[in-house]
Amino acid sequence: MVKLVDETLLMHGGRERSVAATKTFTGQMMLFYMLAAALGRDNRALDYARVPEFAARALEQQPAMVELVQRYVFMENCVVVGRGLAYANAYELALKLMETCYVVAERFSSADFLHGPVAMIERHFPGDSVCATGRNARRHQRSDSSFARVARATRLAITADLDAAAMCSRSVIMPREIDEFLAPIPYIIPAQLFAALLAEAKGLDPDKPRSLSKVTRTL
Image 1 (tube, rainbow, N blue to C red):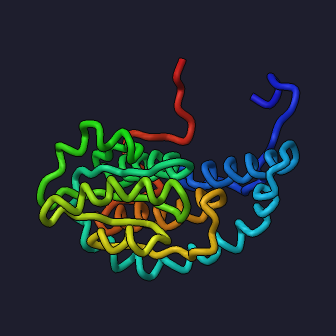
Image 2: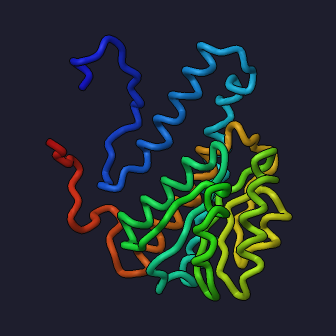
Image 3: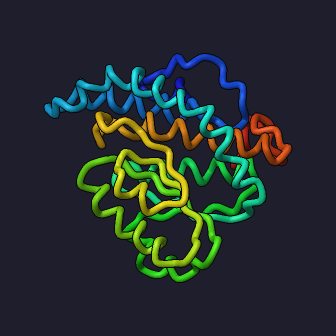
């Protein structure tokens, strides 16, 4: 691929040991921040230098995630909801759940979710929510409240918004100082940990999903 293009942006993330690529998401996202900082005038992009700090703090959630996944060992399907920049996180978490845990995971923006799919929610139906602080977080709460109206619907939120967390059965509380603009990388780390640890709790190897290989031919 590198030979076919004029310019390349290499991640230098080291060897990817897992078939379910996690560094691909975070590494490419970091390159987008760096590119935005180089080309744009939005000073928020210059704050990308704090992302490694935020990522390290996100990794501190691992002990909590080890305990949390025990409640989801028998999960076979779920929905994952995000909005704004967190929409990409919803896709990534759903993909990891499908790849490593063999869970049927549908992903939606919180806006699209309310236009039909919310009808399938019933008691005990599991849902995952990715919600940073900011304007989109307030809009995202509408989908959280829709879950809350369903008696005993199981909700897991990765959020810094305490109001959103209060609507959920379980929550992973992120630092409020992480701006919504910088949230995708630190917020996806607990989600990726959740998928990997859930796979192990199910007796699966998250690094070697069945029927997958590192190189997939699509010719």
